[in-house]
Structure formats: structure tokens, C-alpha cells
Image 1: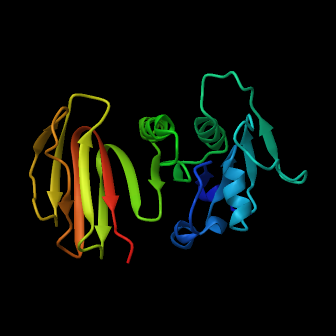
Image 2: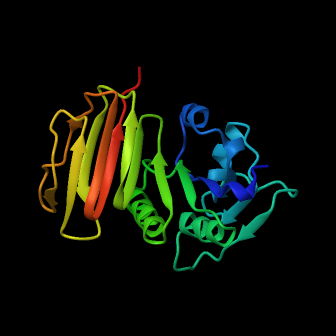
Length: 216
């Protein structure tokens, strides 16, 4: 079981995961693991025993084992199962979140909802990342994200929760200094990391940062 005092939480969602690659980068044993509904199926597939399972179980193929702590939510509710997992994480003192199995799949609306889960985390002073095998998504309200030893990876930045954001890039093919990115614009799309250390700073406002690292 992960140590709660580390304040690190992994939330496993219901989007089917093709491989365990993300778990090799983010070892579940380092986190307090919460499965959101059908995320329990992903956990079972890759031999992960969660600390907690939460949901209305409308998407899960298997019910959690009786010895696993389970919180059952009503089907009719105002939050998604993933948001419910974050709310419980907050009550447990978690401040850092890794969300896997939470983007892609058949339900595009759920991917958008989970971007707003990241925004909620950022608005409440925490940090979070949505992860797949080749993509990481961050929501930054101010602050910065640093990438090391990722030459050739693609980075895109978009304003979020507002009409614009002010950013500075270092170590990218197209550097920016205190540049305003606007909504209804594609200026922030498909930059490339060209240095061993790259940094994106959000000086003003809020931004979505998408890191894409192609499979080898």
C-alpha cells in the first residue's frame, strides 16, 4: 500500500489501456491508488491492487474484491467518478495526482471532463498530469513545467480557463518570451524540444500543456 503521507495519488480510469508502459514510468507502489469505476478492470489486467475503488459501477466489468475498500456512488450525481476520486484524494491530504486510463477511448466528452479535473486540481493548489503511453497533459495556472532529456518530443500549449495566457518557452525550436497565446488560435501547436532541458512557464493565466513522445 502506498504511503499516504507522500501526498501522491494515482487515479486509474476506465479507458482501456493497451500496455503497462505508463506503470513502468509511474510505479503504482509509489502512490495511493484509487480506481475510478471501470478503472478497476485496468488495475486487474496489470496486476495492480488499489487502495480504494470508487464509482457507480456502470462501466466496470468486475466488482472489486471484498477486501478492497470501496465507495459506491449514485448513478445520478453531479461529479464524474474521476472527480469523485480526486475529492476523496483531497480529503486524504493528496496534493499530487497522476491520472491514467483517463483520456482517449470512445467517450471524447470524458476526456474533456478530465481536463477540467486537472483544472480543478490546479485551482486548489495541487499538481496533476494525465498520462498515456506517449502523451502527458498538464494544466498550469501560473508556474512552470520542465522537461529533461526529451529532444525531439512535441509540445503544444493552449490557453485554458480564459481567453489568453502569457508564456515563456526555453529549449524549444520556436522560443517565446512573455508571449500572449489567444483562444481561437493554433499558434501554440506542435513545437519541438531541441535542448536537453526545456521549460515552459505560464507567466499569466492558465494553460494546457501537451507533451507527445512517439513510441520508439
